Image (tube, rainbow, N blue to C red; front, side, top):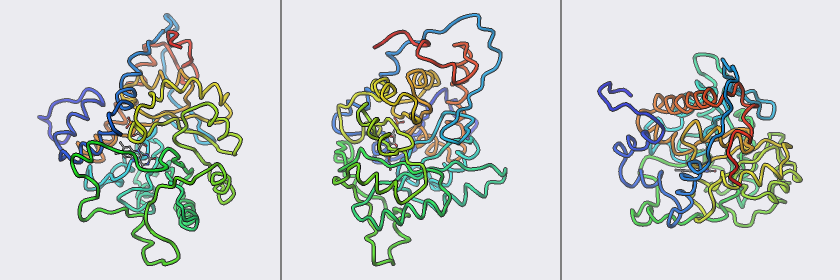
Amino acid sequence: MSNSSAIKLAGLRDFESAACTKLSREIYDYFSGGANNEITISENDRAYDRIKLRPRILQGVRERDTSVMILEESLSTPICIAPTAFHCLAHKEGELATVKAAVKANAIMMVSMASTVAMEEIALVAKNNSEGLTPKLWFQLYIQPDRELTKLFVKRAEDAEYSALVVTVDSPVFGMRDRDIRNNFHELPDGLSLKNFDSIKSNSSVRPTLEFNSGLTWKDIDWLRSITKLPIFIKGVLCGEDAQLAIQHGVDGIIVSNHGGRQLDTLPATIDVLPEIANAVEHKIPIIIDGGIRRGTDVVKALALGADAIAVGRPILWGLAVNGEQGVCTVLKMLQEELTLAMALCNCSSIKEIKKSLLYSIL
Ligand SMILES: Cc1cc2nc3c(=O)[nH]c(=O)nc-3n(C[C@H](O)[C@H](O)[C@H](O)COP(=O)(O)O)c2cc1C
């Protein structure tokens, strides 16, 4: 915190309370809220509390190694940044502050197609970090009805050296968010825009607007597979059958996500559907999970139930709102330290040791 007299923040949820005091009601509600009655948000929040840990004792574990491999990438932490739109609503530096923190934490940042800084600028700032660290940037793509526009985005991601594509498939249409309706919040304030689209306005062969695409099928994934060598992650998988189809269609990884409860309401918590998906995937491709992860013990539970890594969405926005780059650094560091602490208390020396046997049977 920049202000030393400020109240100490003891966890990611404290960041939400602190961010709430910094943001306007409309913006706080836009970030925090979800679809309809927000049943899925509360499921995501509560599901981790229902799962209980079952540690072993006297294992003589003196050190903890949190590194993981995702595809060919070696990461010092299984904690990733989920793609979220409009970071400039949280802080004036927006995605640039987030990416600087991500690079410092050696964490994967999935950059939203709906960013308020252009994807090239984000990549450039990441690359030019003073410590010479290698950024780990993935680009989140909504496949557009216009294939030429989609192709253009894939080419831009390749040119800017993003190392994977995250294709979000849980949004055939825009979810209905009651808080935004009540607040009449439906567009970005003056001065902010979807920067990725601004730069293509002069090109008349494509329509430069972000559209959701309800006509998508697995054929579109095959097409995407055919036009790029970048690894493809499908975000929004919620059942075993779709995970198997993803593998059959040459997808490199999946993200188990209910979009943080912002699209279809009354979906179950992602952690509750993870075992079914892990069972179907049989370790053939990596699984990342997001939704409601707020504590190191939540990370342990997700890994124990079959995830290879996890991602956080809102906590990053809260960190940004509270203190820009430094706030995001603190959020990532806190979760990482909590993970290490939870591993220590569970007597696990490495991520590989976090297995289902670390949980009391819940299923
Ligand atoms: C304000 C906000 C904006 C989001 N924007 C996107 C987006 O542009 N693309 C996307 O794939 N997911 C988006 N998501 C969903 C997140 O990637 C992620 O699935 C979700 O936030 C995870 O849940 P958590 O916030 O409980 O950690 C957004 C979520 C929030 C809260």
